Length: 254
Image 1 (cartoon, rainbow, N blue to C red):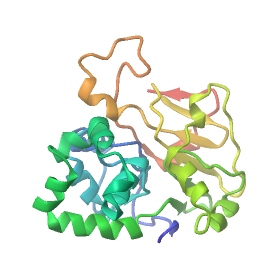
Image 2: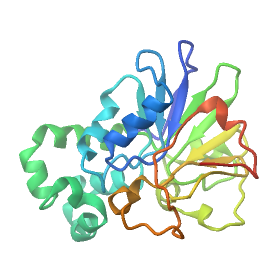
Image 3: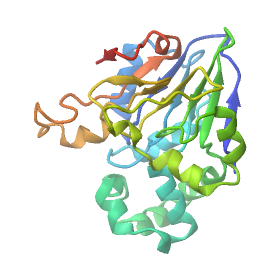
């Protein structure tokens, strides 16, 4: 099981982080076009939740095969992995209701029966997909990427405990501390951390954590999202990693 993957600095192009994608390939490609993403030299780092809710979840998950794409697992990937290991371990109807039906139709049994190659790939990723990424920058700084948060106060502590503590791994993909307006968390041993999981109307900094899920999960409801909702203008956000350091505690970017 991969827990933390360390990735060297990009000496050829730029690095970007992207919020939850949730199976929406066309909006992702539009965002990459907007930032002039060059697949030959640039790299994209995902905070997880590549699948569910959007119609192209399979294609988004298969981006893992691309040399320019890197992702940590989110809770939606973990639900799929858990089902593949033991279909009785989760409530399948809940999975379908909360996004699985958008790409699996009748359900995972039928879907994986029709797509054995993808089933094998997903089972492989259940072992290989990391829980966290540590990204080196050319200037010596480091960025930590996880799905929802860092549930400890020191990055090295996270790296040491992840392999043996399921509770830490569970918190890494399910906790939602950023939902509390006063939440601030400073993680030692890392310059910045980047997360998704909780939908916010804008990218926000809390302590030394940057939260970049700006609502791809809401695309299917976008025609009915009210102006006063938690995210009236849902989008996928891709941000160059060097720009993350310009975000201050009081800074919000649409």
